[in-house]
Length: 290
Image (cartoon, rainbow, N blue to C red):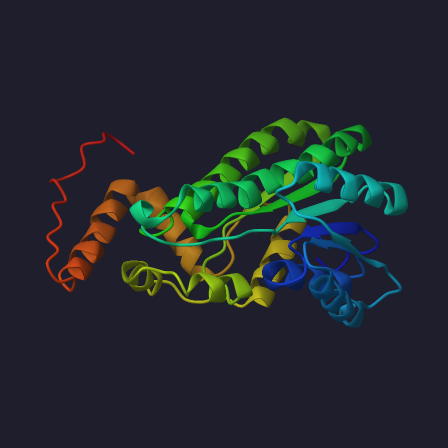
C-alpha cells in the first residue's frame, strides 16, 4: 500500500465521518491528494482539518458539499472538481444511510431514502466519473456494501436490499471496466463503530440486536486499512475483519439453506419472549438448490 497511493487523487464520498473519513486520513498519510464529498459544510471543514493533520506530504485536501441523492448536484460538484483538480484516480463510494425496522412498520419513504443514497448515490457519482476514466484508460472504483448485502437479516429489508443493489452494480462494472484498464472493488464490512451505527442502534428491533451479537464490532481505521491494502493488491471482493470472512466462507461451503435454518432458529427463540406471539414458520423452505 505504501507506494500505491502517493500523488494519486482520491475522491471519497461520505468522507467527513466514519469509514470514509478513516480512508481519507489513511490515504493522506500515504501521500495521496484527497477530495471529500458530503452534505454539511461544517462537518466537512472539521474533517478537512483532521485529514490535513494526517498527511505526510504537501498534498491538497479539497472539500465538496453536495447531496449524492441529487444527480444534478453531484454532476455539478464533480465537474467543477475535474476542472479544478483533474479527474480522480480513485473514487471510494462511502456515502450511505440505514434505518432498520420490521418491513411492515417501515414507510416506503425509508426504502426510497436507502436506495437514493446507497444505490443511486453510487450510480450518480460513477456516471460522472467513469466516462473520463474510460478515455484515460485507468482508474480504481471502490464501492462500500455491507454484510447484509451478502446475507440479509431481520430488520434490514430496506438497507440490505439497497446494498444488494450496490453488489449487483459492482459485479457488472467489474466485467465492463476491467478490459478498459479500470479496477472495481466492492467492500463488505461487518458492523463498524461509526456515527451511522450509533444512529441505527436507536431503531433496531430486538431480534436484529440478537442476530448482530453473533459478529463483533470493527473500528473504522481497521476497515480503512483493509480497504486500501486489498484494493492496492487488485482484489475485487474486500472482506474487512474475520467475522465477515467467516460468513462468506460458510455461505460458499454450506449454502444459504443452512443459514436460513440457523437464523430461523434464532428468530424462533426470540419470539418465545414476545407475549402473545406464535410464529407459524410454515415448515421447511422448498426453494430448490442454492
